[in-house]
Length: 492
Image 1 (cartoon, helix red, strand yellow):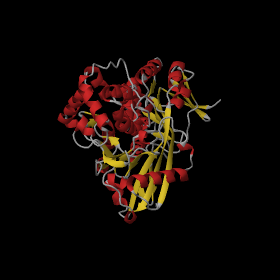
Image 2 (spheres, rainbow, N blue to C red):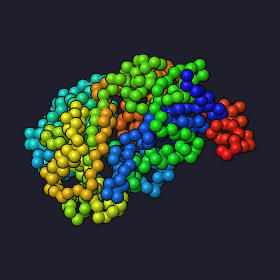
Image 3 (cartoon, rainbow, N blue to C red):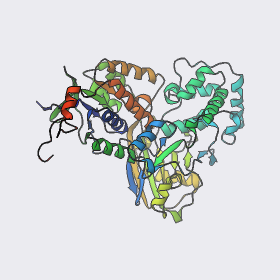
Image 4 (tube, rainbow, N blue to C red):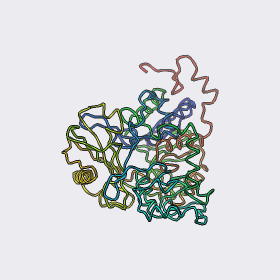
């Protein structure tokens, strides 16, 4: 029988998972005066936000930017002391490697969907451009409760738009298949257009006009952080600890059990008695934890599929390299290349270039949903295929100073058609258990702001966890510990 830790003072909430969603949930809970413990199975916080170093230059080995047109991530960065380190990209110009050449990435689109055919001139064939023009004359395409992004856009504008624009864009975000991905879950602004407009291009033009008129969507679409986006979870974790929260690494949760007073959270050799639990873990882990208390939620979570990918980071002597201008390029799967994108990190982020002016860093990504053979190759093979494709695209033939391969196995949850109804069923089942909430990438979006918003929604779902007045009086007593609600002992 494991030893039980009984919390004293403030009502205790455990957050399972130390990725950005779990850390954001802990940060928000502390705002509400709740005692918080974060349990993370691995030896670090941050999840898919991973800072690192190559050839003496700090870089990201995971996600490298956050959407700035949603407020949650930038606001959390500011709250945790990163205001002076926020940086937009040094360049927003990107390319598309298609039809044997690097071509300027078209402007005037929403997630690859153009407002006019002319925006895609040079990328699509003459037949593809003509097919877009037919959109204005086609009858309405019904989308029902949900529809695959690729299916709908192909019906309106033709497959070329999907294959050469939407696939590479969604592949960069979800590593997914546009013909399977839910438009309602993955691109909700386009789903709203599809439900209210007959012509997709007309709806996109209206959406673009609204975005242009909205001051909140002005400025850079994305934002980075000096030292890398991986600095964000470190800053949030530091803030959590500074305000009395506890973060335990190398502490996998082995079980959850509902009790008369709340929850028992079992780890190796001990169990915590707590008032509430936030599960901020990947879907398979969440499913295992909820299997006993919420078999319905667990069944839905087990059905969530994931895609794997790998990032290949390469450092070169700047004197040996001449890259095209811009931040990098995307690659449509239809072109049959191995890499799906490349980021010219030293050109995209000013702070990377400043780390060492004599070193140039770039990276490639490989792996999409259903592609397993490429990821079975060893690191050396992934570096070789990346160098080959980079040479084909840019002429780069120099030998790198250093390379790092980072594998994200089952790293990106997939949002197929009907994903929103699955999430609704999960939350309905979880809501039947007081003091339990879930959050993270499996639910409302894989981007950093979406994960943070999911965390905040989970905290809201828990309701009032504030310290009862009689316990607050105890905590306010002279010499009381503001975290544990008891007098300081000797040496504390």
